[in-house]
Length: 228
Ligand code: ADP
Ligand code: ADP
Image (cartoon, rainbow, N blue to C red; front, side):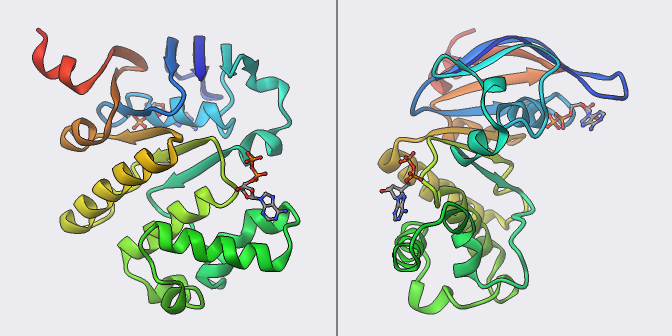
């Protein structure tokens, strides 16, 4: 469980991007952060892996203050998927996925079986895709690789910042459905940022609606739709 207590973020510019947030992300849920551009969604998400350290308040994961972790150790347990994928262009798909396991010092044969397993998990064919380079894959396939890479070291938490926004509508729908299936199977805690209400309603176990650095409402899609 991830808990925010009176958490705010003031950037170096002096701009307060996030006000005093108090909320919890349950273990194993897919929580969507939705809101207009500039409402503080990315800032909120990036405080969890300390890409964007919070200014005041406390964030805990399973009761442990995130500031008490070594940053590398914290991030090893938190997969991160962004819109611009960020695959290394001069690495093969296999090598891109293997980065974290290699850093962790796994044996080569364990790495290659893990890569194979992950490619299958995200709907790619190891025989075909493992040895290709990112530019030889479609946008949707590259985004699948991004998800596989985020899962490589088996993190408990996955942060996804508008992961499907750059994709064409059909591919996007397909990946949404696949992520829902994957989430049911792996039972990871996922925090998913989007500004698309349909995507939020489809994907979220719960949805946090953000505006001007604050969470206006946090509830299940059913409650958000059917309660005044
Ligand atoms: P969202 O993800 O909802 O679009 P962000 O969290 O990216 O919103 O940004 C929230 C607000 O903080 C915006 O007004 C944005 O301009 C501002 N902001 C984001 N990053 C920085 C930064 N590094 N320095 C100053 N202001 C920033
Ligand atoms: P956790 O301890 O949170 O499960 P690990 O990164 O230790 O995360 O493990 C991730 C997955 O990879 C697990 O399924 C584990 O069995 C496997 N694994 C971990 N370390 C190695 C290793 N050195 N070689 C092969 N597989 C490993």
